[in-house]
Length: 164
Length: 394
Image (cartoon, each protein chain N blue to C red):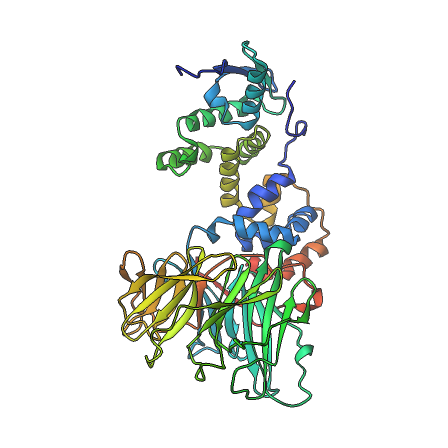
């Protein structure tokens, strides 16, 4: 990271909701549009201090994962999402999580505006729920069934073939 | 200090906008039809016609994997006609839908847009025609109302039609020309436009001057405009296959235009075929002669005179063998002794897709899954096809 000419910041400190601090390289942090926006704003103001960005919605467990993803992806160009090595890494990265972690990771990606991670998590979730039953899907998304049994049966009957 | 995108506070479950725009749009329609049962919120999200239009664009299997929709003739031993989804690389069967042949066999597919097949049939008993929109991916069909074309006079009423999508209004339109009696010149008596959202027909405003309409022939839809072959009946008396023009219909603005085709240097050739096709994102003309074929591509000249350039030469005998032209430049054609082959117009490479395929497909197109027709049309009008039997092989 030798000559980042005019920009003065090389690192930022990100604080998780459970008050853990993470020192993050600027290039890595820029994978998140939220963090990038904060850095850009501070640079405009001409601050030379290390800035602290609190993320009140993201726990340190999840933040660690988001930053692991950002670190890997910072090594590749923006248009490199089709790179085979990266694709393989993404898949290995996601497949070890349970749904609760995936959910939290997805929310963090949405909150931190990390589009490629959001898309990746959601594709992974979509691929894994596409053959599940309605009840299993409700459990995964923690959704309460607000249909009466009759209403649910009627909706099912509209497209009964899709349930076979 | 920090301006957050939005404040949500700590929460356990995913917000519905993420579920809708990032997860549900990535699901195949069969899963979506099940997901309608999850909760009232999910059901209303999936039923919203605007969701259907986002899903068409974002569902990846619509773009990446090439699957083909193939309508196949009735089975000899069963009284069923089949709509088969086949793998684009090997023509292998992935899933199929059986349809009662007594109900289906007279229909002829004339177009396929956003997962919706437009079909027409002529009913001998009543001497009337009718039009059907069918979305095989959700097993829903819709017969268009036909009071317009009532037959008090007991004269043959035949129609030809084409389907298009109005991007501006997320709506579908069918343009239909009606031919009354045994009109020798193929001049339609009326031209009508059907709008799906209002579920009604209106008369089209057409310039009857140079009468360029014709029955039959393929129609293509590209960037909000439908194109089909037309003929100037005043100058060319024998119309079969000899289009002199394309007629175009702008679906959003209801505007018809006539497009001159490149000069026909082969008027003397006895047998040839001409089709409008889509190549990449342009309108093109496929000309098939006895021993070779060629493709002309139209430059988009914004309303001025159309410029045609001859861009591809195909050294194959394709007359009456062409099955389907994929817009990436791959042409499917029937083999000498059955089977399905493919030819790439750029690499000139020929491949055998299916050696033992014995049927002659009635209609082939790149398959698109969509929720079109699920909702947003009058409840009374929608129907599931009779005897829709699903056989899943995937």
